[in-house]
Amino acid sequence: MGITAGGYILIVPPARRDLLLAEAKRGPSFIRSMPLVAEPVPKFIHSRRAPLAVFCSFESDQITHIAEGKRGVMAGTGLVRLNMHDLTELSRPIGFVELLTGIGMRVRPHLQRILAGGGILPPKTLQAFVDRIVELDETAADRLAHFSAQRRDALSRLAPNEKLNLALQKESVGIALEISGISRDDLVTWRPKNDSPRSFIEGLPSAVVREDAMLFNDFSTLPGFDAIDEGTHFGAKVFKHSDDPSIRMTVIMANRLPLEQQTGADLIYYNEAYRCFVMVQYKAMHRGIDEPEFRWQEGDQFMKEVARMERLLAKLKAISSGNDPDGFRFSENPFFLKFCPRILFNPDDRGLFKGIYLPLDLWKRLNAAEKLRGKRGGNVLTYRNVGRRINNSEFVRLVGGSWVGTSIEQSAVLSEIIREVLASGKTVTFAVKEVVSDEELY
Image (cartoon, rainbow, N blue to C red):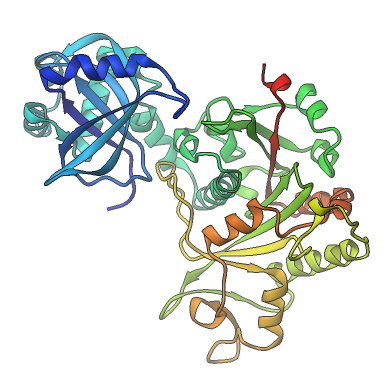
């Protein structure tokens, strides 16, 4: 079964009701930014990478509250913790009888069984249940948008190339958040706002597509940022660390073509504290006979992109690096390739794609040494022949600490690089991590 948003009916024991509600009202503490309540429940299966709506019954035979949930650790033999936050009261309690009278006969027995003792809702039962909840309480519609018919219909209308591009864009935002130490939970709030999205960022709440004077003023001194304002469509969103609001990341997703005409995605990540750029180019692997593989040939689009990176790298290498300790890098080559074996656009999945990160220099060595050759002599990259590689967590540590990437002096002259990437037909995810002062916070 794929990773999908789920729903859970929680029948709260009478002896626990006042305690949980009091904890939910307590508010944030120095330990966490939001109150967290938990209840031991029978063990159930649901991916921690997908959203889980918890429909709570704090009064007999009535749904009274909705919370965001996550399956926790073992809480005893056959039990797990059901962790909940953002526990919100419905506009009115909705009785079980009232719920069931508006549910189709096919799923009514399944819902009746779950309402009797609680538990995870089967997919079709969940959809019917949510539709009925929203019908009876319209104020819950935004909260339950994951399950809306409008969202399902919009996803079904996306063309294959649109889904591919959205998947790559989502991945670029996800890895940027991971590098910055910011939760990826916001990724699963995505829902299409119209029938012709230009980028993934448009579907995130509070992501405003604009040419905003304030945004350009904030980043007027950022190297290469002026290139984005050259007739480019873009959306922007600010992500904040849940426990440390001084850490934030602004994501600007820029492109010059409609979604269906775009040719993939690049990530340009900038750590403001160390004035360091890293650039990641995403490539989709395809199913081979024995394992996923990526193929190319001389003169194709991939080789043209490699040539572009090498040309720009030569210009960077001509710039001498200074002696500022913040400018120290293990490698000053900012270019990385990520080869992904399975690219699916799943807005319910907050996880990252598995794949192979290769520094550009390592890929060049492998290619020159003819390590990346198929049985008939063609160019092919696989898990088996690539040998050493960098995974997601290793990449996050390297980039998060600015151990790799451009030096301070190189970072100051990146306008040409960013212009060339924008001209390539891809969407550029331009992610800027910054730490703001107390004066800027308040």
